[in-house]
Image (cartoon, rainbow, N blue to C red; front, side, top):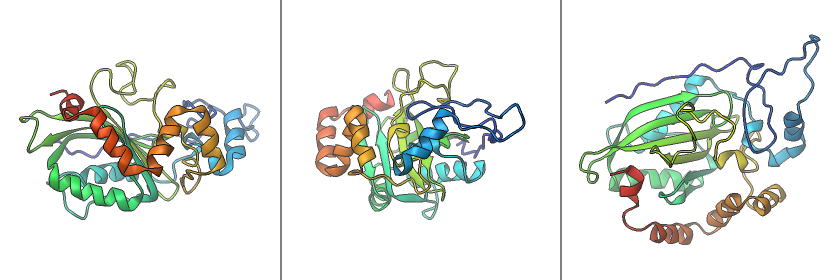
Length: 268
């Protein structure tokens, strides 16, 4: 079982400056060639104006690469029956877990619920989380992993491959966890040359949720910025609606996906 903890080196701050406004992310040099202080890019100016509604690409890493990788590993430890019970991630108070179909979209909201459901999943869907490759990045999501869940009571020994991303606040708490089946046509990457979803045209939700780019990474479902984003982005609106009515929404999504969503999501 490969559980190597890998840290992807972070670029220098100059190489990692943000040059995007609210929806896409990429890196580019932004030093002032005159030798003076660099002028604010349009994206940086937008981040300052956004205030409590800032999006996650406005954030810069405040922890080491090794820290982000360790937190991602701890997330999977919390779901791995072979891992120590005390190896758990540090969730923010209003942390969100979003798993794209055929999984059930919003599958966790708030620290308390995530910690509780992690224990339930570990008990009732026992698995080894193997073939882990977790890496740190200079732009949000700061940690990204490719792993396999080897379930003990389903799949007939076949692995379930998952691609997962982790967004953090300045304190190093996980604020948004986003997952996809790591199968052709189900990941956010559009081509094989981008195995870690670093290109600009990536379909992820975490970079579109107001509040995740603040120091606390705290979201406000009823805040002005969230309501404005929801009015323009149906997927943000869907997140807000599900978070406000979690269990009925979860149940409805489970019924919609049907009893075979594990088979489809895992490619069995």
